[in-house]
Length: 465
Image 1 (cartoon, rainbow, N blue to C red):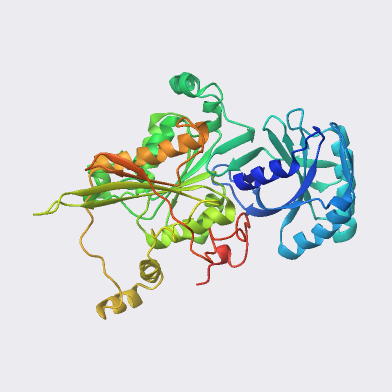
Image 2 (tube, helix red, strand yellow):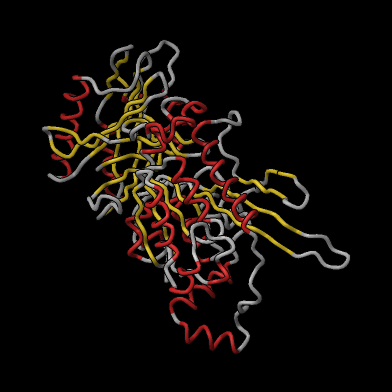
């Protein structure tokens, strides 16, 4: 199993770099990070995901000739970039265009790229690889990975990820009569797109449970549910599908949602993980997702997902609510928030949506409860406080906002520009507004591009501790 995430910013950079006035083919390089997934959560199979990290032009002095059916250049820059890729733990990719057609690999591509693999083997030895990407003039894309001189491994899909989300390559089935009504709105290819998607939901409570149910009924083919909690009586006012017997029996929230989705008989494959999102055992599952919904009020969990979005190019659609009761002289304050993070968008830290101190305290409580209680007794931690208000209509409406943002990314039903990176809805004032911010100078996630698409590194996500 092999796929490629091409960051939207990198696709735009490549298409601008490779555009030619005479319609000739052109070429460039990409350096790719990777996610080496030991077991896909739905199939159990090993898989590799490549992620675009950095675009590199072919030097002018290396260009030899080009026409509408070919492009050639010296391999000097290829050899030089092989050294860079090896030193940085990345994979080198060659990119070329088919300006007058769709993306495909020609017989000449097969011959030339097999020769390039010979250069890789001569320099680095057997077992090393390089990738190849073709961009079609019609907006299409295809990719493959060369590991042996006899044949290349095709990418099942190329996902272009950013404020808009596009898939090239394999899709799912059309969902039949069950999904016919939405195909009438979004077109005949929409259902196959969502059926082929893998979507994670972190937090299965007030916003996570309706998110899961909405995605299942949209026809998303593969859902991942992550949560560490069990159903309690106080959850029954907002967790979709939860029953009194679940609260009495302390049934895990992920199991409740999996049961309800399975009972609906919609053909959705559900994988579950009961635990904290940053648990090492959840890494394969998270890195297998195309999109992740953040439905948790855990600051350390948000901090973790924030890094996942940039290192792996996986859009994270985070949501939250603020509910303040009315008091004498002060009206209700009721708002839902949806924030899209990933390369090209401000991160949750720069937006002020993560409290580093709270994240540190949550990590201490999870890893060393005794030390946490001791520090709490000494007033070094903030403490829990009263439970926040929660009403099912508002938690569900926030989930609808988030899922509709994904639909905007897939279909553009609101117009061009893709998903809004920040959206807030005031339930009390009945108003919506967009929000944004300027990245902080020196922010590792959104202030530069060094970690975008970097993929697997040690320590994981460069997290220490």
